[in-house]
Length: 351
Image 1 (cartoon, helix red, strand yellow):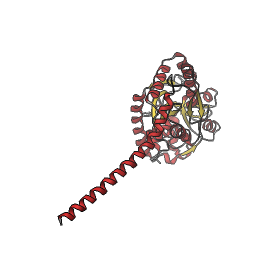
Image 2 (image 1 turned 90 degrees about the vertical axis):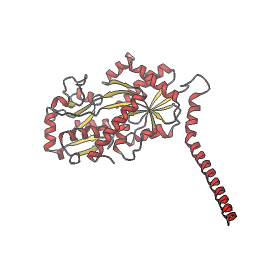
Image 3 (image 1 turned 120 degrees about the vertical axis):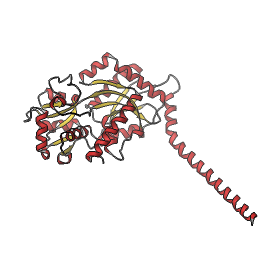
Image 4 (image 1 turned 180 degrees about the horizontal axis):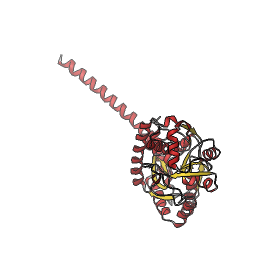
């Protein structure tokens, strides 16, 4: 009897050993597939000699040309092309609220540093907060550096009846069903800026009407023409129409007035506190991009933040430099994502 038990035990041991070996083989194959793209990226980035970059770089903007993200990317590309002696080419890939271009840059292109992405708040913290399964995830990318920031401008048509943000907010409290506002989607910058404001003044956002647009180029004419009541975009994106007298900025929601519209009071000055949403853009790369490439971009962007020519260019765009290095950027994003996720969950915006 003892011999039979020993024989069975040996057979079970051999079976388990075989299963373990097979599991290790399968795991090795999976790991190989996951690291293959990274290895190819590292090899491509190193090149034969001379270091990165050795050829043209594709700087993907996931939006149409002419918006704030695009203009910043072009200013960066111009300076880095001069610095590195290689073309940094801005390529616009709009669609899906930014998801189309982001998926191309972060998942389809090789992670070799020759495809980078212009990131923005709506593709970073807001995308994660707005969707339980976002099409662009934080874990899909390396957040390299933040470059600039801007404050929201609450904007209505030039001949609108309201003369102040306080007066407008009182009207919205009394007539929430008459408020129409533009946004690029659930995770759009405008969605969170509007949601934060409505929450602060005690208005149920579900009683208002969201109008989804393809971006600023479509949104602003809707408001200027009276086909939507409110647009909330960064100051830089509404400035031209405001200066031309086609839009009226009722308030900016920053700690201080915008240096570009010093006569426009902040929301806080008009009795509306706790509006903290703001716009920013930076650079992201695909996971697996070589560390030395990431570092080279981070260091170059840090230098640009101190470059008088670059900061002067930002001033013409009505933008403010706001550099964060890779570590600071990650910490900032985590805090901002937590805040927006809580807000979206509270207001029923999370999809």
